[in-house]
Image (cartoon, rainbow, N blue to C red; front, side, top):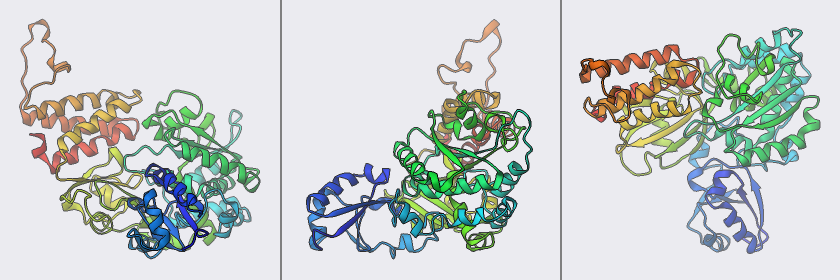
Length: 511
């Protein structure tokens, strides 16, 4: 290699956090030209440098000289042929690691805008029909068919008080162990913008908003720059970025809409559905980043194309799965639905980073169930997970080894809900606090924790009623059932999933 060699290094936030900028400066000091590209998603090897298709990582500035003279022990061979990449089926992340995020020329050269051009040559109802035919379901958690939601908005009549229809992208990626939205917004922002423009054409919307969590400053800058560059390409559709206020509950669509309107991030009762009365009371499509970014590929190939042919039963297409936590090979793995959790965690992820046995895996963020190794043959598919009292959510997979205290993790779920609740509904607001107290009492052998209602002096000389451990467990089960059935949104409704799964599979951790 010579000093004139072009080095490709990601400017993804994770790569930067791992020291990519220092490595870039070291290559530049050696006289090399460095191109900042999107991330391949091989996170355990960041900072990763690519030279003529060959990868080197994880690098430090002191490794640069050895990389250039060919003596580096950080060489991993061809990145495209690396087992972690070669086993994937990349559609949404087809450009990951290959293009410069803000290059319009690079985007167009890799098939960009083809979906939008084809969509605009079709009638709106034809576009919606193809999205329905593809089987695309919302990738934000609920898995609701995207095309059905679009059709509802398209057919919604505008009243005198409803000025227009909107497209809203939910980019408030708050689940633990998730980073696919951030990677796409930072690495391939035009794909998201194109997907939103296609949705706008399909439902008759002229304006859209991307609601991004405040913890993603790199994504905000990339999206704003990309919107400026693509303004003429997506016209007459207009889109802008709005930065969230940091509340986890704003990942729920109605709370997000309130926040967009400048109101408190509080859940709305449904009905009416946002598809009929959403942003500013107007019919609104609310989809997350991965849902909208999948649309350009679907429209460029047609609803019956590759996307519809992948997956299993009602779970069609691919899912960008995020491997995180105590795992040896963490990163983004996009694959067709149907792969088992055992393959993902043990084969692709390589087991735990600590080398200890896997004790539990949480799928679907902090509200997802803890899955026992005995369930690892569960296929990655919405219906299979629902049948196991679990959820796929945003596709985050967080691994824990055998040192994890699952009783403590169950308590954390209730504590998290208590801290993040918008406070509107009683089952979530009060139930989470009572749930935390109950778990403390169970773990303390029936004694009430200091500061709880149960620990206060009894009033009017009322006799103190002691509860057995079995009664406490039954009460916790009843409380969880109430939260699941009566909460206004998924925050309170799904919090029981990690609690009950921990109690079911690891009762010894509650002793």
